[in-house]
Length: 403
Ligand SMILES: *Cc1c(COP(=O)(O)O)cnc(C)c1O
Image (cartoon, rainbow, N blue to C red; front, side, top):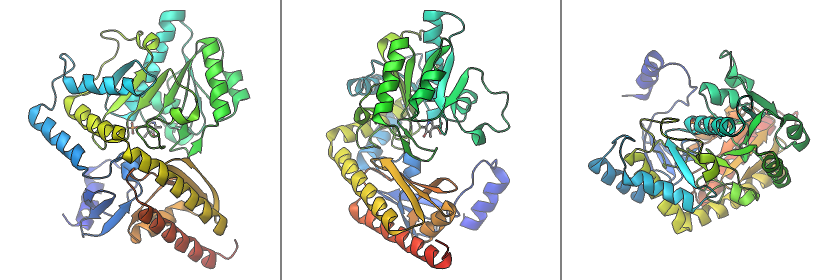
C-alpha cells in the first residue's frame, strides 16, 4: 500500500494515540531500516531502545523460527523450558533470585508495584503501601504506572489516579529522606531517566538511597525497562552505579523486538507472591522467552557488550564535542548507548531534518533529543550522525543569528 494511502487509512482506522514520522518502514537489516520507497535509514532509535541486536540478527531470527514451529504458547498452567531457562539466565547474571514474566514495561512495573505492596502488607499489615517515585520519571501507561510516572502530561485527564504515590526531585537525597515515612513500602526510580529527558542518577545519591531503604526495610525498585539488557554498556545499569535494588524491571531490549517484560526480585521479596496472587496469560510464553534467550546468548558471548561500551563512549564524546562547537546545544548526558542532547531549538525540526537525510532519531520532549541505537552501531554510523547534526546546527545558527 502506497505510503500516502497507508497514512490516510491509519488516520481512519487507528486511535490517534501517536504522532508519527511520515514514512512506512517495511524491512530492517542490522542498523538499517528501509521504507516503502526503498530509502535506507540508519536507525538511532532502535524501536526505542528495543532492537538491541539490530534488525534481523541471524541468531535471533533462527531462535524465533525454531520456536514458532515447535510451540508458540501453552499457558502458565504448564511448564515450558524456555521460560525456566530464561529465568535461570536472568538470575545467574543479576542480583535477583526469582523472576516473573509479562509482556511489556508497564506490566513489569505493575508487577513490581503489586509485589512491593504485597510484601509490605504481609510483613507490616495495612497502611504501609506508599511508593515514592521521581519527578520526570516514566514507568508506563497503565493506571498504576501512569500514577507512578512523575509527569503531569502522562496523567492528564485520567483522574482519579491510584492512591498511594508521592513524587520527589530526582538526585535530591534530602527530599527523598523527608518523603520516606511510616507509610512507605518502596522507592522506585530509573537509574537513568529515559523518557524524562535522559538524566543519570548520581552514584552518591543511589548509595544514600540504598542505605535509607535498607535501614527502614523499604524496597528499592529499579525500573531498568530502558537501561537494561546492555543499553548502558553493562547487562544492567545498576552494575555500573554501585548499588543493587531489591526489585528490577526489564522489557524493551529483553526480547530484541519480541514483546516481553520481566520483574526480578530477591527471594525474601519474591516470597510475597504465591499461586493466584499475580498472573499473565501471555507472560513468559515460549516464543518470547526463546527470543530473549537468544538475545542473552549473544550478549553474554561478550563482543556486542564490548562494542556497546566502546560506541557509547564514542557517541558521548562526539556529542559533547558537538556541544562545544554549537551554541544551540545546551547539554549532553547519558550512559553508554542511551544518550540525550538538550537543545535551545525545537527538537522536532532536528528529527525531521535527520529523517530527510536518512537518519532515524527521537525527541523525548520539545527540546531533548535521545539516541538509543542498536548495540551493534558502528563508529562510521556515529560519525555520520555527528556530521548531520553539525550541518543542521550550522544552518540553524545562520537562520537564527540571535544565538
Ligand atoms: C518504555 C518504558 C516503560 C513502559 O514500557 P511499555 O513496554 O511501553 O509499557 C516503563 N519504564 C521505562 C523506564 C520505559 O522506558
